Length: 434
Image 1 (tube, rainbow, N blue to C red):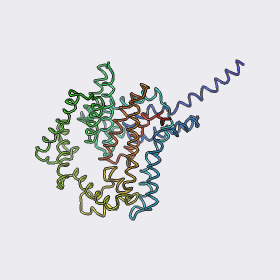
Image 2: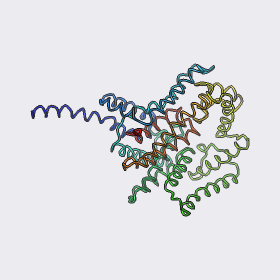
Image 3: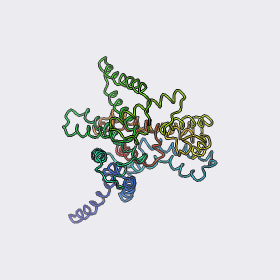
Image 4: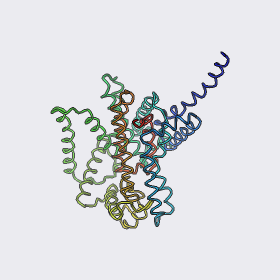
């Protein structure tokens, strides 16, 4: 009997360790987000492989079947499939049709992650994410001092690489907001934790090359502040201060002379001057767009994108023009404009409305609404571990909602996979109410 027990234990031990492989790989995935895209995709592939060999398929299927995100994700895929069948391949989009259709299925990559169970690995994954953000901030500092070599591993910190550089700034903004929410929630914090928060925040504000990061960072901090409000005069007065500051900054920006160039990444200036220039240019461009004036710099192309794309949306508001239709239609309508060669409208909302109409847009918003609903449920949970994930999930959802207004965060895999990795850490173990 003793030999039989020993034999059974020895055969079960490797299986038990192997069943934990997906969580162990998921712990380190957030670190890959701060390096070349190939690292991130390699990490995701390793996760899928670890999932395949981990076993316990019945339990994994039950977790997936009971997860609150399953139906909204499948709903988006179903709506886009119906739109694709309804319109077929639009004229001029035959080659882009299948890649474009694949972009609308991005959330499906989250489904294997939803089979993970909640546990201590989530906290370790968040610490890895904060460590990666600290390392990224340090690399930005080295780059600003011209001490970072221009090699593939660090190239996105040395030069502006479009969406990858924007993503790095957004990741720093998310890490900063998550760290601050944890510091505020805990009664005791070490000086090292505050220094880590300040270091990441300073790098994001002064050295990252994106305005979107600044916008979502401010919104995430406002969300945190509103969640801690108590409905009394003192709290309402504190809440009014950011609003008054925003009005003051708006008036200041509009009173400034028009900068000679709003291509901030090409301007030779101190980091704090670039922050001021980004703010002034952004607010002045918003005013120009609202008053129907055209801006002459490269950043002003966004106003052209919004204006022409809005006309396309009005032509087929409910079911859109079809998957992959935006680029050929836009290039036809934008001939002679500086934005005529653009490949996306730099907004998920404009892209979804143009190609899938209101139905596709509602399917996307339903996913975001479910993420927000889960954050609310987390905040009311009796489990302290789940409550600690409520504000990070709410902030991440807000960042995705805001980021989708200014960037194609679901169309571009650089953004999409990074956000899905962070969502995977926060959504593991969630279940629909009985």
